Length: 374
Picture 1 (cartoon, rainbow, N blue to C red):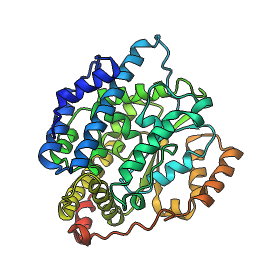
Picture 2 (spheres, rainbow, N blue to C red):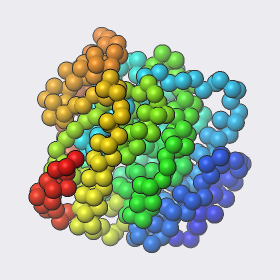
Picture 3 (cartoon, rainbow, N blue to C red):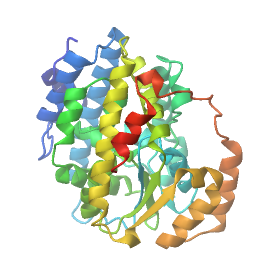
Picture 4 (cartoon, rainbow, N blue to C red):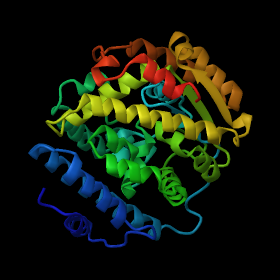
């Protein structure tokens, strides 16, 4: 691991010709993350190269975004009206619901390609031919090729809805890093950081990405990690509407562990299933505790609980219920798109993702005990 954080920063500044990192700075989160990679992640040579390249990409994005914010005239970033957020445990069906909500022609959702390469702000009219789509596809293809079972666990594509947690990674404050590398010291540090300023920056990024998109569109976003800071999310987005998806932890936990093993296997040849199981048992229990503590302060009109089994059994009705509850306009285009998407995307189309608690050193009674008070 021949590159230290200072050298990664230098590379990004050389690539972009920029040096303004913004008021929040980048040094401590970058140092924490790379210290964990050095001492805990057991990266392969290919994994080391990937994380170096990914770090430079994220740092370059940060510099480019700060330059864009400095360039924009006051008032250019307009308020976001009634953004819709899908939250829930990791592996609780949030991706399925997000894909369904993205079928609304009036919805603005985060494409993976623009999450990976956010500058310049994408224009709706030119997006189908934007070169970032090809660039992102090549990156995804390469990383997926490092572990054949990853696509079965979690299929992603350049022009499909992406988890908005990726935008936090421009400040190296990302809960999705857990799925890519074993970095427990970094994850524990992140769990105790104040997130008000990172959420302001996240908000600015969404506003920036809205610049060349129809202004009447409402954002439809999803990130399980928002459960760590629901109160901060609502403070930053007072008009937010939140769909909280619920699935049995007995099903969520082994799926989460299996995805973590597949994700990390791309970049490391040392995977400890029992350690992964113990980690996610603690982490999901903490996620549930924080979410339950925070939701008491959220007005009922802003939060709707949805059951995973109901979503799978009747996805059209679930989306209709969400729209009716929050007052979004149901339209013929949405109904038609939903039916078409469901027909074209049957469950397990990329292969069956199989997993058990026992694979990760867990038993049902442990899970029951961890979540019985949640």
